[in-house]
Structure formats: structure tokens, C-alpha cells
Image 1 (spheres, rainbow, N blue to C red):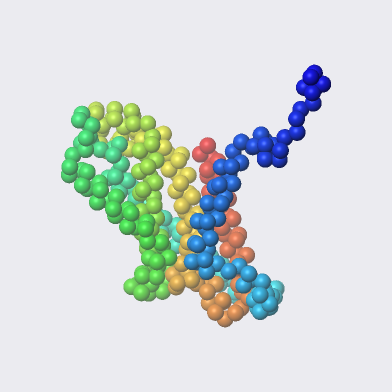
Image 2 (cartoon, one colour):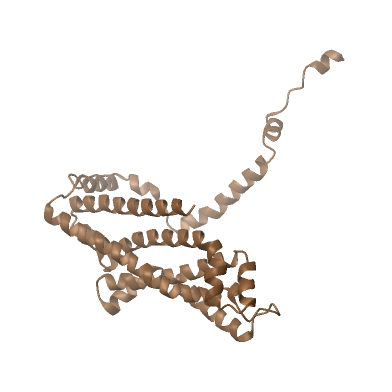
Length: 287
């Protein structure tokens, strides 16, 4: 009897798995459900990755990539790329500036924490609630349309060039910034804003001295991140005629000039890396 108790009984493989990971059934079930959900989507999207490994596709890919070397490096071409790169950065910065001009007043209107009519009763007046809802719908409309679609529409109105890109970034990013700014302010401590408003402060005063001191770091961090995204977006919008580095890349692709594409791709990577470095440095300063 004692000897039998000295040696543990052998456990089945399923019992060992259950003992080591009690949640394995839930994970397996989740995996099976994910496969059943994703498979129809992949079929509907006509996702066929094996085409990349077709002999004809591999031959065309190799021939195209071979034209990338050596990258174009003539002085005239590099000067053109430098001008297009500066145009891209200027487009993104100007678009972000216009977006801020529109987003800041909209943030004031949609942020319930800065509402004066709710003081005392805690409820917002019907007129203020109606205006706030209209502005929210406007923000939804602006951010629902991607900047690339805005650029396609604006190119047909204002013609080719950076103007379409600047306005496209301003429209889409105004909706994004207004929504996120309002959410950040709503999640901050309400005591400072309420105290200022109850003592006769204006909404702008409550924003500057009540909400911003606590939320400034998060607001600035998100703004810098959006500027970084605007630079990448400016390059993409160049493919629809909005100017900048993207438009030059589109022209080189149409001419199958792989050496020029190689140079511009290198500049593209360096530009995005530099924007990421600047944004990272500014974020570290805010911490």
C-alpha cells in the first residue's frame, strides 16, 4: 500500500495538456473560429499569394529589381529629388497647420467638459447639444473620407500640384484631430475646468488653464504622430497628381526607370525615418 503511494500514476497526454495549460481549450476554440471567419474574407478578397511564386511572376520581378542597380545619382536628378522631397514635407506641414486651425475650435464646441450650460443642473441646453451634435457629424464626415480620396476629388477642381494635397490633408486630419483632442480632454480631470467655469471663466480660459496643463503632453504627442503620418500620406497622394516625391515616383514607374525608383525609395525611407526620429525626440522631451 505504501509502496503504491510512492509512485504517481501515469497521466494521459490530454490530462497532461490540461494540467499544464488550463486555457488550452479556449485558445484552440478561438483559433478554429478565427479560421472559419477569416477564410471567407480571404476568398472574397481573392487573396492568392501563390501567384507571387509563379515562374512568370518571378522572372518579371527579377528583371524589374535588376533595373534598380545602380541607383540614379546624377546631380540634376538628385536636385530634382531634393526639391520634390522638400515639397512633400512642406505639403504635410501646411496641411497639418490648416487642420489644427479647424480642429481647435471644433474641439471647443464638442467637448462637453467645457460646456457652460451644464453648470448647476449638470445638463447641457438643447441649443448647445444640437450645435455639438452637428459639429460631431461634421468631424465624422471629414475623417471618414481618406485623404487620398479627397486628393482625387481636389485634383479635378484645383488641378495638379501640392494645393490638392494640402487641402486633402487638412480636411481628413481636421476630423481626426478634433475627435481625438475632444476624447483626450474629456478623459482629463474635470475639477480644474469646473472651478474656472463656475467662477466666471470663459471656455477658452478653462481650456488654457484647466484642461491643457494636464493633457498638453498627450495632445502634443498625438499631434506630432499625425504630422509623421501626414508626411507618409503626402507621398502617397503624389501618385494621384498632388505633387511632391510621390508624383515623381509615379512618373518614374510609368517609364520603368528602376534606377530612379531606387533612389527615390531610399530617400523615402530616409525621410520617414527622419520624421520618426524627430517625433521620437519630441516625445521624449515631453516625458
